[in-house]
Amino acid sequence: MKKITRIVLASGNAGKVREINKLFAGTDIEVIPQSEFNVPDVPETGTTFVENAIIKARHAAEYTGLPAISDDSGIEVDALDARPGVYSARYAGENASDGDNNNKMLEELKGVPESERTARYHCLIVFMRSPADPVPIITQGSWEGRILEAPTGEGGFGYDPIFYVPTHGCSGGELPLEVKNTLSHRSIALNAMLEEFKKHKYI
Image (cartoon, rainbow, N blue to C red; front, side, top):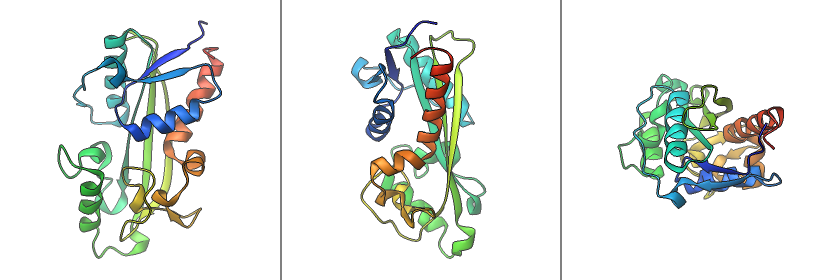
């Protein structure tokens, strides 16, 4: 199998770029964000995480001519009937900030007792060797927690400041990146992807 040294990351999210590059450190792979190639955004029209991840990876590979990796991730909250799910990034509207999304979730969960605030992050990662790759590699990870009543911590991104991590007794926003990278849904999915790369002899 051909070794892979350059992959375009189908995301402009600085937090994801930072986390993924940190997790790929130690390999010969250089992960380049699609923003360096001026790849335009593609509409995420899928109704599942895996559909959206495939759409984004195919688009980035087609535009750049490089193999592409993409993730689609979000949070599901049991008390909200698994919402916001694939709409996590735009839960409070198309151009919503992380703060807007967090505030909307806290408002919707007002009065819901701690025992019913269970939630989990999901991450689906797709790797495509080319836009026409008929067998993309797909891995996934999930991270269990619950939603706090107010944000705490300045780290992380997305819903991290209101996502309580029971194993560490703090929010995702209070975890150092090194610790988060051993726990998070994205790190689980990415580590599974690294194992797939080894199995396919890409690295």
